[in-house]
Amino acid sequence: MSHIAIVYHSGYGHTAKQAESVRAGAAGVASSTVSLIAIDKEGNITDADWATLEAADAIIFGSPTYMGSVSWQFKKFADASSKPWFAQKWKNKIAAGFTNSATINGDKLSTLHYLFTLSMQHSMIWAGTGMMPSNAKAAERNDINWLGSFSGLMAQSPSDASPEEGPLPGDLDTARQFGARIAEVAARWNR
Image 1 (tube, rainbow, N blue to C red):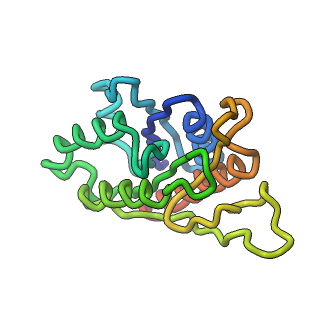
Image 2: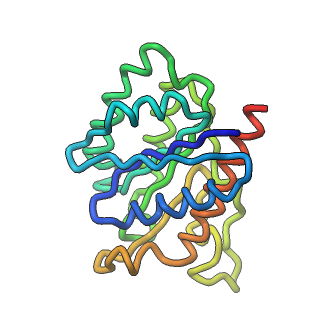
């Protein structure tokens, strides 16, 4: 069994919905168990959550993209991860990341680069989406990986959409496939 931990911050509920879809995809892989860890509005997680991250085989990081990077709450969590970093407690774990913003681009790649750099600081092994983009003329907005991301999972929620309305269905389907991929990578890595 591989244990997948998904640690994320969500300001308005859209990224939490994305995280839940990632969790559902990872949980659908027979050889995995999944823990969902929400960073609170003050940027904290519990001691039990830190222990869950230490015990995990893979950690998937998630944050909305605010002003071209992670939320300050996620950044506070990342800064606090210097304690496990010092002891290299996450070394050789699988890492992956996801983000959501209101616009199609929204500088989401900057957020994914931040998450990638955090994982490299921890000596982790980064896994991307492993998905081809939906970029043909016949492509439609709710196709898998319509946003065309390779390095991590991206979603878009219109700025005036409630969490019930966004992220859009295709982005949530993409999130489920992404979660399954990371669980499969973790299982293969931990053989």
